[in-house]
Structure formats: C-alpha cells, structure tokens
Picture 1 (spheres, helix red, strand yellow):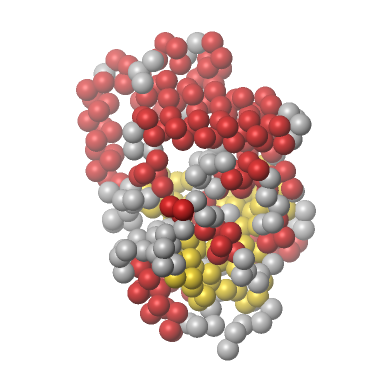
Picture 2 (picture 1 turned 180 degrees about the vertical axis):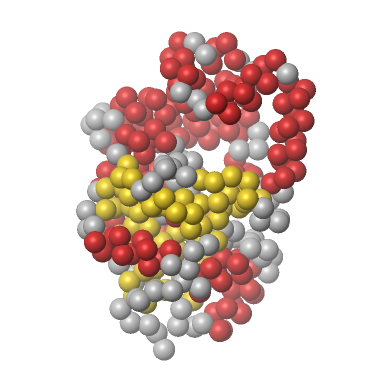
Length: 322
C-alpha cells in the first residue's frame, strides 16, 4: 500500500556502496516523524552487491523504499542522476543523503521540517555533522558552520565553499528543484552550486546540532576520484572558478567580491600544495592567508620549514581515515 500525503522525499544516490548502503537505509528508517516520508534510491548500475542489498530492504518496506536500478551507469554518460531520481518525488521537501553516508539523529527530518513549516521564507535548512573514517567510523572531525543557530547570507555561502555545509544535512523545498540556472550543471560536484542557488531564493538556516555523519576515505568516492592528485585538484578548482564566473553573471555581479574571494582562496590552497609559500602570503592572497585558522597556519609552517615531520603527520592522518 503506497503512502499518501508524503511530506519529505529522501534523495539517495548510490554506486558500489555495498559496505555502507545498509547503514544509510537504516538511518532513514529510524526517523521518527509525525508525517509520511519516502525513500528514493537511485542505484547507478553498481557492480558490487549494492543493488541486492537495496532489494532486500525494498521487500521489507515496499511502501517506504522506492528504488531505481540502472542497467547502465548514467553518471559516466553525463546524465544527471540527481534529476533522474527526483522526477518521481512526491514530497514538499527534499532531504539529501548519499549511499555511503548516514544520519545520526532519529529526529533529524522532524526538526528540519518543523523549522521549514514555521519559516516559509527558508530555502535551505542545514545542520552540523561528524566526519568519520570509512572503515571504523571513528570521528575525525566535526563539520560545524557556526557556534549556535544562524541564518547565512549569500556572501557567506559563496565564500564558505563546498565544505561549509555537510551535504547530507541539506534539506530544501521541492518547488526549488526545478529552478536550475546554468551554473548548476557546470561542475562534477552538486552540493556547493545547489547551496548557492538556494541562498539566492530565500534564507539559509543552520541548526547547530550534529545530526549526520560523512564518511571520509571511501574508495572510489567523488573525493577519491577528484582530489587525489594536484592535477585533479587543479582541474576541480578550475571547474569551480568557471561555475562562480557564471554565478557572477547570473546575479548581475552583485556578489563579485565574495566570488573573487572564494576563487583566490582556492588558488591559495593550490599554491600551498605546490610549496609556493612566499607567493601564497603576498599580493591578492595576503588577506586570505591572514584569515586562515591557527591550526592551518601551523601545518603550513611545518610544510615550509619541517617538511619531513609534516609528511609523517599527513601519512598518519591518511591511515586514520581509511
């Protein structure tokens, strides 16, 4: 029997997540709400047992879990899997969680829905989360956009970059899903341009609670594919710069200062990775460098003057997140 009056559609994109998909689904099923929700899963022709695991859950919860099992990988063909999955959404709101991540709080959907219902001007509701290593789920760090609840301005969303909000915290009205400016389709990453677009359509509210977990160090993940070498990082930041240029034009250059600051910040990180420390601390990068956190500056100092120790620490960190 299909559920009626669905208020929230969960958007779950998955590919070769056999080790993680069950935990993601369990975190959806544990949600305690006073409304109906649906779980929309798009399996992009996984070559492992991901699809089989989803099918087992589909048999147990046919009224809740609505999968798509692709026979050919759509992402590799350039087809937007997110839009494919959301074409069938019936909810008033969309909650995002990819198949290798999961939620921690059983009241996550209820809290975000309650906020949205009381604040119709809100176009995006996000929250804090834990960053855990892929294998043992040990907490590596916390993704917290602010100490305390906060409404974020467009400028802050742009300057904060893709790491400002944890992706599986994003919750927004379905009516905005069809608002698709050109800049949304210019990068291989979707969360950052989506956050920018939603910030242009209403208010962005951050709930200062750790309600989800993001896995770091997942083999074959977007980060693993696109941020594993300087060449790939450079290509990624070039994509982001082109996207931001399109945002600049789309907004009639209203946020040009924030856009340039974000672009310079990304360029600064690339300079640091190349060991160009003097260049990173001067000219247009100087003010941005001075704004970096204390811990980041310590690592930069060690990279510059104690590179052997720094390498040992970074290797230890990589082992931790596996």
